[in-house]
Amino acid sequence: MSTATARRPADRALPSTTPSTTPSTPVVADDLDGLPVRDPEPGGELLPGYTALDRLGVGQRCETWLAWSAELWHPVVLKLPRLHQLDHPRARASLRREAVALFDGHPVLPRLVADGADEPVPYVAVELLSGECLADLVEDGPRPGHEVASLGAQLLAGLRHLHRRGLAHLDVKTENVLLVGSGGTGVPRLVDLGSARSIGREQPPGKPVGTLGYAAPEMEACAPLSAAMDLYGLGTVLAELLTGLPFPDGAGAAVAGLDDPVAAVVLRLLDDDPGERGRSDEVLVALAALAGDLRPWPEWADDLLVRAGAPA
Ligand SMILES: Nc1ncnc2c1ncn2[C@@H]1O[C@H](COP(=O)(O)OP(=O)(O)OP(=O)(O)O)[C@@H](O)[C@H]1O
Ligand SMILES: [Mg+2]
Image (cartoon, rainbow, N blue to C red):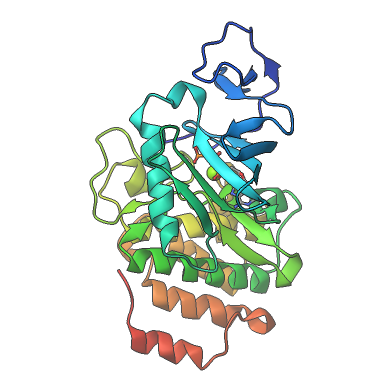
C-alpha cells in the first residue's frame, strides 16, 4: 500500500556515483524516498523512441513522463520503472496490470497507445489527457452537489466497465482523476491502472493494495479484492469534491454534516460494510438523477441499465 502523500517531481541533485542501469541518463533524488529518478534535459532520451518533455509523477515503482513518441509523432504519457526497480518484477507486474486493464478501452479511461510491458525495460504509453487533477480542484473548495453527482456517475460508468471484465481499479482517489474541460461541463478521466487486479483475488497478508488513508477498511485488512472497494474509492473522491477537504483530513465526517441528497449517496458509498455500499447500477441511477441539468445521459437510459443487469 502506498502512502496518501502526493509524490511530486524530485528536486535534489544526487552524487554522480548513484548506481543506475542507464548510466547516461542524469538522475536526481526523489523528494520523498531519496532514491534516484531520471532527470534528462527536455529532449533527452527516456527509452528508444521516447523523448523526455516533463516528469509528471514518481511512484514507488514507476516514473510517469510526458514524452514525445517518435513513432506516433505525438506527445504521450510514458510509464516506466524507477531505476532501482529495473531488476525487480514488481514494476513490470504493475505495468502489465495497467496494459491489461486499458486493453479493452472505455471513454473514461485513457487510451493505451503502446504496450511495452514485456520489453527488456518495460513501459506503457497512454493517451495524453489535458486536464486538471481533481486533487488540485479540491483545494479550490466545495463543488455543488449536482456537479459532484454528474462526475460520480461518469466515473462509475468507467469503473463498471472494469468490473464487468472481472477487474477492480483499487486506487480510486482524486489524485488519479483528471478533469478534461472545466466546471460542470468537465469530463472526468480515471488514470493510474497500475493497481488494477482481478476481483476475488487474495491480497498478500499484511501487504494491502491501494493508498493508505483512501482504501476501504476491508482492503486495509487484506480482504479478497472486490468491486465494492472501488465504490468506497469513488466515495472518497466525491466526499473530497463535496467538502473541499482531503479524505484523510476528515472529508467523510464532514459529508455526514451536509444537508444535500448527494451527501447521502456518498455516505452510503463510504459505509464500512462493503455489503451496504449498494449495487453499482442503483448508485449509477441515483447519481444521474441528482445531477439535474448535468445529467450525463437521458432518463430513458436508466431503464436500459436495469434491464441489462448489474455486474458484480
Ligand atoms: N494520461 C494522462 N494524461 C495526463 N496526465 C496524466 C496521465 N496519466 C497520469 N497523468 C499524471 O501523472 C500523474 C502520475 O501518474 P500515475 O498516477 O499514473 O502514476 P503514479 O501514481 O505516480 O505511479 P504509480 O503507478 O507507481 O502509483 C497523475 O497523477 C497525473 O497527474
Ligand atoms: Mg497515481
